Image 1 (tube, rainbow, N blue to C red):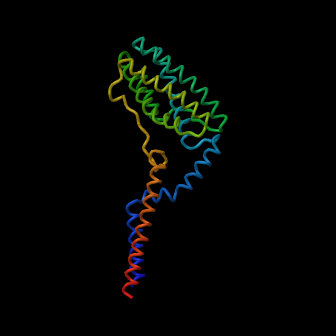
Image 2: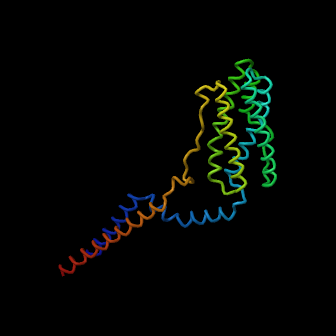
Image 3: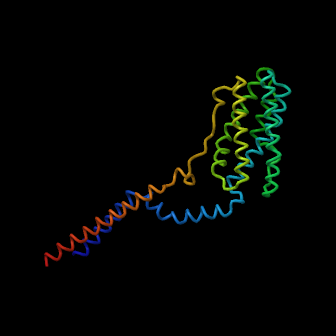
Length: 244
């Protein structure tokens, strides 16, 4: 009888702890694996991961359509401001294109050679416009495009293990920020163009993982639970001895 009661108490406490603090126990179990993965990533810092490659492809796609649209704006812009913005965008993306081709060659990455179908639609839309409408479409399409890649560029800058990618991401980050600012400065960007597709939070992001403080709290909870279990076991044991 006494052993049955003790087993019931132990099973109950384990069930309560697992249901109350599942994330903490999972974190404790996965901590050694996470450390091993981090060490492996640091050791292979010269390699490109999936996010690094996505970053190179994204910048390449941007270059393929923004360089010709920048040139077109420099030629056909209805205002001097838009013409100047076009020249800046074309020059900056031309420099990015040279850098990214050199980097792709070093890392053995095959870059795309033409814009995406969506980007081609934007190019057709801009090309078909004229006068003040050209300025408006150009400014809004390019501002929206820069906003959509800004989150990825910042994420790569903050999280890449590759030093060359980090340096390139920093340069790209500065350029994207500058282009968003000068496009907004044309006075043609509508509020709907002021957006940025922030990256979704995932379990891979540091802010979604339990830190050292969380793990320490888990340890304290475990010690308290163990102490409570031992106390209950001793209580039942003393009651059993008294009954005999």
